[in-house]
Image (cartoon, rainbow, N blue to C red; front, side, top):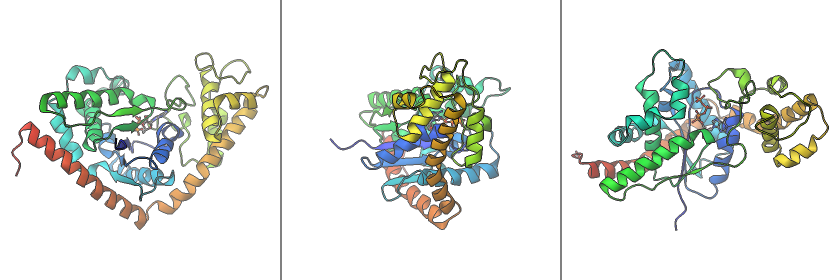
Length: 328
Ligand code: AQP
């Protein structure tokens, strides 16, 4: 059995957070040693909500630099920008005819993001179809994601199965890879909500936050009544979230972290969490500074999109043929 191909994407919709890192990026780094990997800065996904054009361009480069700074090796992985490979948008269009309005409007993320908006674009609704195209274009068998993407991945699987049933075996049906710990890092100012890069800066630690900002944000993080540092996500969501962040940053289990802080006060605990996060971010920030704006980064992305486009073209052509497109 050949090793499953891996695909995952990251949106340049804000500053990448430790939620993105702990829930997804750190797994990419491990997977690159065992699988053929495709990682993508999904700029077209970011456009499903309004973006400042200049900022989007800058953030796209920033996210690519951060992916490399987290440890992706361009000799091992194909790293590219989604819009540089037009086959993503094309396959997405072909999938529209296989996707139902009801299944898209039921998506939790769509409902969350559409809530409180005066107008809702069809881009926001169709986001999961583009995600299905991203994954299926590379015949990826494994998709490392945080817990919030589980439902979207289910749709990608449904589309693959639907296509295979209607047009004959074509797509690998992808499996999600969701970690047991860290798959849903919660917001610092409301630990009942997911940490998100498009929320207010106090709700997350960004990968590029300087040490004093990390310490200040964690010192302000909402905790729970009581004094015990115990992992009880339902009764103590704030402390449990900080324990998870600490454990993953310090390379320990949550149980080990609990034992370490037994009897300590919240303030000392938060200081220790900040120190562990700062140490995790230090090498990432150093490598990021070398890469951002460099010719090396531009060359890596150019080569990545060339390699990705070659693979994508094969799948797209097969799909076009099966669906009855007259090829030029
Ligand atoms: N809080 C989180 N905990 C664990 N994993 C997370 N991910 C996101 N937030 C958390 C995972 O990070 C990867 C990249 O995410 P994305 O950029 O594609 O978009 P997202 O899932 O919508 O992440 P954000 O940060 O919440 O972005 P916005 O605010 O723009 O919607 C994914 O694998 C995701 O699961």
